[in-house]
Length: 294
Image (tube, rainbow, N blue to C red; front, side):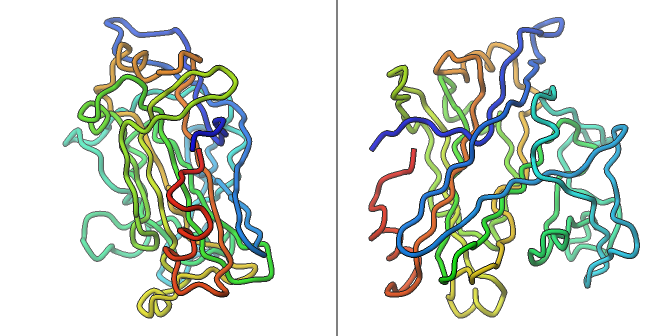
């Protein structure tokens, strides 16, 4: 089933390439949030980013250190950066590779970086490791789902990145996604998925990911309890993404498959009442079948 595109985040391509045409500029613009529910449930999809002042992240300070010893950065809803220019990423570290954030906090178990972004500001559980800020031009899109109803719910979030006329092999190189697969199951990953815009009739291709919530805490996840309680909020599924430094202007033009001058990124969250269903997959199959929400 093909539906009109509902945008949560999009980037407007600006004609302003550097010498050689290897750097493309983008500008974020406002868009609406889409949620779909089945049964007696209500949810809200929230997208946050870190606060930046004078090019620096704003620390919450020692008094906000969490139970693991991490000092989070201040976060805000994605509003203030709408319309700001971004670029393909630039690696600042000596190895010229993408790495994880290692600015402060307790040592990570892997020993490869130590900073975690905690979600206490939203009363959401836990924390997540981010790309290091030495990888410039990363886009924060911490995507949460809050249960605003009175019933336990199963939730999942779909993310579609415009692929346009870029091949799967090229796109695997171009798009880097930081995602939370510890607390969300990545149950689908689809390249070349076609979405028709009902207003223009144009068919465009997208790279689609579906995240299904695993549960509110480690005990629930271990027991297979995937529900989100009333007034509870998830950890984020999508964390960050960026364009590879090797992305060329020509590739950017090919990615704009619908010719609207935008590089579209769509996020849609769905929820189903838990009562009466054995598990999340059974609930979503009953509610939405095999149809994607786009």
